[in-house]
Image (cartoon, rainbow, N blue to C red; front, side, top):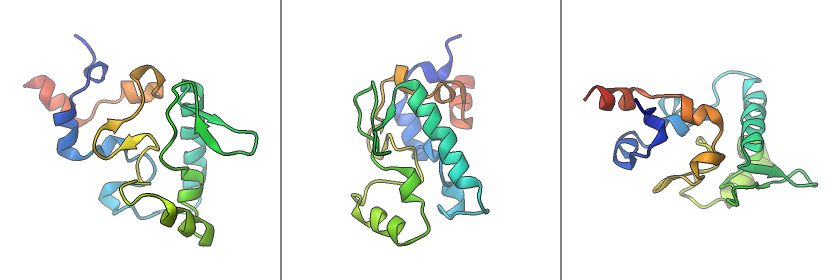
Amino acid sequence: MDHPNNRDQPDLCGECGGLCCALYLAHDENGDYIGEGWLPDYIGVWTERLVASGALSIAANGELIAGEAGVAPLHDPRVSHRPDAEGRAYRDSLPSWVDTRKCQFCHPESGCLLHRRYRAPICGEWICDLWEAAERG
């Protein structure tokens, strides 16, 4: 059987609002930074995954920019999760619809902005409970 993440189901994904895309801070924790020290390393892991997939590139000045996929990231989690004045100023500069808890390629209305081939491999391997329930029918 075809892996469920090999096809799009926007209605199904819209039901939960993209919980699986809340990579950086969990919806069920109200987006609070719970724990100490793990988030910067975790952001680094996702940055590496997205660079490897071709979704992101890192400019000479360190800025995250569009990779081979040609899609500019909606936010830079390395900055948007800083617990200081620079982080607050950066968050305030973003459009109100950008959810920094989520992947930098997750749009609130259309979901993932990346063509499937540019998504990190884990995005095609993980299956949420809603997908599994839909498959069981």
